[in-house]
Image (cartoon, rainbow, N blue to C red; front, side):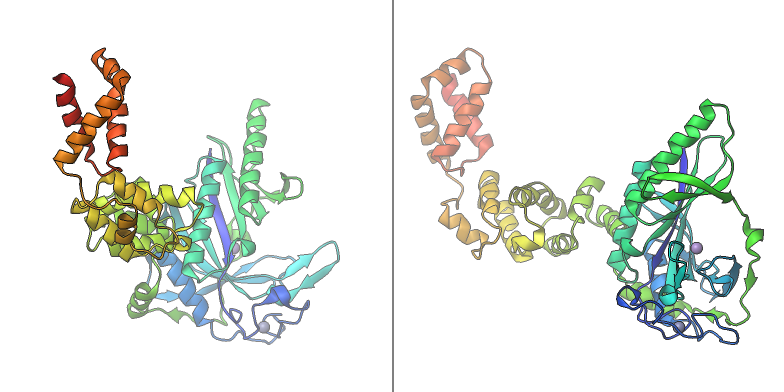
Length: 451
Ligand code: ZN
Ligand code: MN
């Protein structure tokens, strides 16, 4: 099975795409954020295209690794008849970005368009407050092969859009899902407005198309509607092709020139998308992908890691943050930010470890005390009596004590039960409060026991 998505999300702007009406339609009275332009009254001409909308759309395209064709943006008229569209055509731009990717799903193209109004068939009303709000439409290649993959993609996409601050969230999302099974026709499902909805619609459609195959019925190429309340899809119309839209260049909207300098400016200020951050961490710090994913799971954690990696060996810091720091955070049910641990704290702890001022075991105990603690790792280490590696002499004494106090374990060891060695090492750790070097302890214990 193959699935491609077309996702619409509102861009974050104060005013609409071709007029100065505000975009806060959620809290506005019905049909109050309107003017002759966004109502498409005869003779009303669009204002110059909202620059903020263009910038945001370009930024999103760049964050999704799209190639930008830096010549000009033009708007087309896409004709269709529906009560939410008073002009009879939707102003939709030619693609502003091509051939991007997000976690292995190829982005075919990204373009801008205007949102239509909201038609409420049950009441016979249309609210034009939404009419003319800028949208970005993101079209993927059919690279998703299960409902789970589609859901994961949408979640990550919404995360990227949120990171960008250039688009609104899942609440304004409208997606079309294209589904086809091997050898079958492509079915487009419209009117999906949540990630869960996309998942359910895709799942339902697979079952429906599989049943068609079983019954020997050909799946028609068509557009279907998703009924959220019943979680099913129903036939709407046989699929129109591009010719039905009678696309023409909009003569009211002159082409907008985009120069390379502007693209460079956006690149400089735009936040790095999480999936790009993962890639960079792998290349720059020599991490494996799983580790990079853990470290970028929170923006603040990722930022602190980069600060720490300036003075601490990058793989060493990554390993400690991935295993020990994450363990402590999840045990305490804290986000990294909530833990109040700083890059300075981590550098201090990791330096002590690297300089062998403390053992690994001691480091693990210190980090357990670090969340929401005003004390520095050094102070915590002193408080817990964990500073200083124990001298060989002390390990020797502790090992002798452990052997004297545990004759059964010694007996077991002599019988060939290797596990009793771990027990004895544990005893030495207890006596030295975790300060003994484990490798050295094993060697000393062995030499004592072999005597
Ligand atoms: Zn308006
Ligand atoms: Mn569209």
